Amino acid sequence: MTQFTYSRNTSLVISPSIMFEAACDLNTAERLNIAADELVGSTSCRPINFHINTPFALYLDVIYFPNHYRNKIRSTSGKSEAREFLKDKYQWNNRLIDSIEWDIVSSFISKQTYATRKTMTKYSHRWMLSNSKTIDNHIICSYCHQSEDNLDHDHFLTCNDSEERKEVRIKIFQQLLTQLQTPIALTSTLIKVIKTAYREQHQSTSQIPLTQQDIIGWNHFIRGRISKELTNTMTNFYQTLIQHKQRFTGIGWTKTVVKFMLEKHVYEWKYRCELNFQSKSIIHDNKHMYFHKRSLLITVDHFLSKIESLLFPKQKMVFGL
Ligand SMILES: [Zn+2]
Image (tube, rainbow, N blue to C red; front, side, top):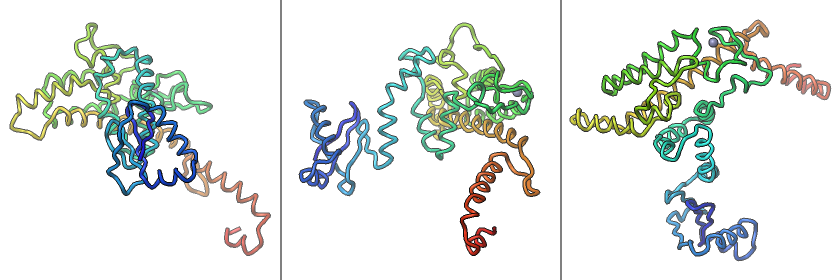
């Protein structure tokens, strides 16, 4: 039994059956295994595979992963690079980047469907296909009717002509904070900053940084990047003031707010896309049809016409030709 080592915190334990095969015929995997053993050197330890029914066991930071090996290895391998990228992008130091509840955000995103996970990740990093990122796809804002080409990436949230939608989001957020029994002063601050975040060309709420979240930035708050300080504030509040209601925890509060920020804003993005496609809906065979669906039908029609000449009469009947 031996182990692969990809990085300091990653190990892959191979079962004895595979090692027996390795002794007979060295393939690429076995050769890599030997190379990994050499790299591990004196830091290696005797691997233990408790999962005898699996061909191998993957451990990351001493946590066993039974599946999705590729994603786990990829995210762990790129962890330090991603951290450096974010620090450079937002001019954060180590203390600041460590003050954000990253685990809560990534855990929530990882539980979504593939499509939602993709959109949420893009939203959290401002990678949505809008603003200058659109190529030959000049989108007009459905609220103010300006071209998005020269507007801010977050225009779908901040457009001055979408006040009604902003109000609805703010109201639902306020209701959520009330349900979570958030202190009145904190509720008032959070509502104030979310209103500021929804304004075009907003500035910081205060000139002197008061909290960790002020330093991180409230525009990150609406992306679910919440400071651990807020979690601690809520933990202390629940423990000291409403001790008898044990169902509330600071971590639970942050998880709920992260969920709200990601779900509501990604929903707003989808709504923006829906509005845009609706305006491009056209009539096809007496039916209203969205642009992308019509585009697909045109492609199918095109290929069908190409094979039509190659088919026998009986086969044509199958395709209704
Ligand atoms: Zn607009």
